[in-house]
Structures are given as structure tokens and as C-alpha cells.
Amino acid sequence: MRILIRIGLLLCGLLLVAYGSLVLALWMHQDSFVFNRSTIVPETLVGRMRQGGLELVRAPGPQGEMVFWASPTDRAAKGIVLYTPGNGGSAADWGDRPSAAVRAGFAVVAVGYPGYDGNPGAPSEIGMIVAAKAQLAWAQERWPDQPIVLWGESMGGAVAIAVASDTKVAGVITDGTFTSIRELGQRMFPYVPVGWLVQNQFDSLARMPRIRAPVLIVHGANDRLVPADMAPRLVAAATCAVMPLLLPRVGHTAWAWSLRNDEKGNPTQGVVMKFLADAASGSLGGCALSP
Image 1 (tube, rainbow, N blue to C red):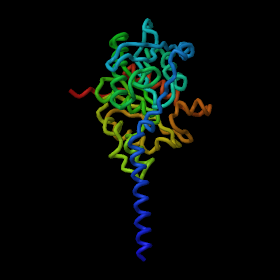
Image 2 (cartoon, helix red, strand yellow; image 1 turned 90 degrees about the vertical axis):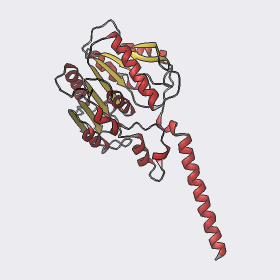
Image 3 (cartoon, one colour; image 1 turned 120 degrees about the horizontal axis):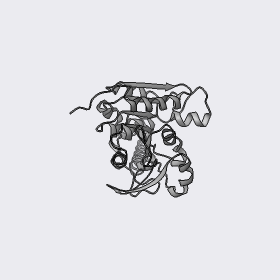
Image 4 (cartoon, rainbow, N blue to C red; image 1 turned 180 degrees about the horizontal axis):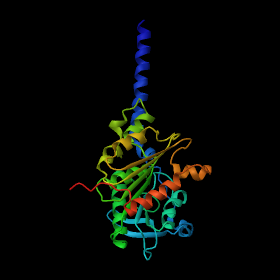
């Protein structure tokens, strides 16, 4: 009996050590899970991006030099679109989205994040938000007094929500965005105390009520990365005009899904472009910023 007890205690100890090692590894390497950053040299994409109406910009910023993409500043515009990409891939993967806004007559800035594609520093929630605001300020200096629409995919949607929560904007679009990294991580690792470990929260659910502008929330019903049931909760948290677009048979980020799968019945592109135009024109209404 004593031998069995000792074996049981030994096994319990080994399990605790293994569990503790797992938790420690997740805490130490969480940035590699959260930020799947691209390190492509942006100059290699200049020709491709120029075809879509975007130029490479290098400008001083609060965290050092900012490297991002923007439409030419000598063109008139009917509004500013600040596109905030997701946590993975480079402009080669998502460049068609801001290019579509350029073709629609908008001034466009596609945000470059710290630690991504030639930008100095390391990615973080605060760093991404600061970079987005700085690049928006750069755009406002070049296209003053223009309505601003934010458009973000996946984690970029969380960045857009954060910026819009304390900035006067005409509209916000999210595509495949989560309620928070804490909740998303808890679902991925249900037996790990993710709430205690996560350093970058990206709490979109808490920030959404502070947005005083129309919001379009797009989500694929078959999204296997960000559960689709998060979208209705973001919709419910919005305090101004909100348009939900939940798409059946669509996976993570509906715009990209429509391109990869050539779905003729996928309305994402048309809905997004119409929202951009309507939000910039003010025809969607909205709420005044709180004092």
C-alpha cells in the first residue's frame, strides 16, 4: 500500500511539474502566439503596392521611424481610411483591402506596427495603438478636415476599436475580431489560467461602448480561429448604430475568405465598400463624442 501511495504521489508531482512547465512556457512565449509578425523587407513590395495606389512612407514617430503604406498625398479625397491589418502576414497578403479604398476615392493609410516589416521595436498592444494614432495624425496633417473611417481585420479590428474608443471618427469596420485576447486564449487553453498570464489584453468588449460612431461588424460563421459567437457580443456592446454581417460557410476574415474561395455569393466586399462611403458621407448617423 505504501508503495502505491508513493507512486501516486510521484505521479502527481510529475503532473504538477509538467503543468507548471506548460504554464511557464505559455507565459514566456505568449508573444509568439499573439504576434505572428512579418519581417519582410517593405522595399521588395513597392512595385506591387504601387499598382494598388499605395506608396511606402518612412516618417518620424513617437517610437522611432514609422514605416507604413499610404496613398499619394497630392490627390483629393472624400475621407481618410485607416486600415489596421491583423497580427500575421505582410502587405503582400492584405494589400488588396486598402487598395480597394484607394480606388473608391479615399485617402488611405495602412498602418505599420512596431516590430513588423521594417518598423523598429517589438509588438505590443500599447505600441500598436500608439503607432495607429501617430499614423492617423500623419494622415490628418495631409488631408485635414476629412471624415475618418477605421477598418481592421482580426487583431487589427481590436486596434481599430481601441483607437476609435477615444478618437472622433465617422465609422469603424471590424472583420473577424475577438472580444478580448484573454477570452480567446482561455478558449484555446481551457485548463490554463490565461487571465493571469496575458500581458496584451486587447479588450474590445470593454472599449466598444465608448465608440461614438456607426460600426460594421463582419464575421464568418465558420471561423475556427476567432469563435463566431464573439461577434454578437461586440454588436450588443455597441452604443451607436451597428451593422452585423454574419456570413455562413465563411471562415476567418471574410474579405480574405471571399478572395481565396472565389465566392460569388459573398457580399463582404460590396457591404464594406458601401459602409465606407456611407460613413464618410455621414448618411449613417452616429453619436456625438462625450465631453
